[in-house]
Length: 213
Image (cartoon, rainbow, N blue to C red; front, side):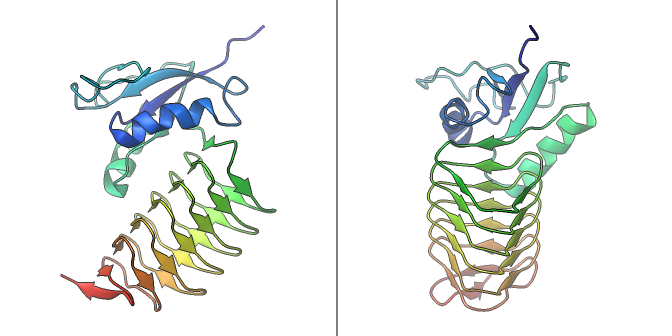
């Protein structure tokens, strides 16, 4: 009987500690892998925290073992990409974490490293890129796309045919109306209501959303 691979979580901050539970409650747990622990460049990340997670060392020092698979639980897209690509360059293999309460429609494409947290909904004919995370109670409606490394935070509503670029940060309770496009590396502040396209690199906030900075 073969031994299951072991999941290593990149990031031992709040999202990483949440990921311990979401991974244990995922559809893959003890089917595709078991959990090994967390890596983080902050060696004090778990000190004083009540958590079952084991700290395995720094990201920059980690050499992937042949029996390890990875998921990145860092909330900022640029750090998520940087750390994931570092592990990939050393031969690390990435998996997905799909919580058992997440809902998937038909013909959904999920790239490596995708995370679907509790009660996330990804509707029909959607495409989620590498490392995309859809957090608690957020939904991605039909025919939408989310680019690599983007972070969709809690209680967000991405409606039909929305196009989100790569490296986009979508703050909690953001709503995007149908057909809107969000450019690469944009930042959508918490509670923003997006009624028109957002160019690459812009920061927008408010209802309706307006550019700031």
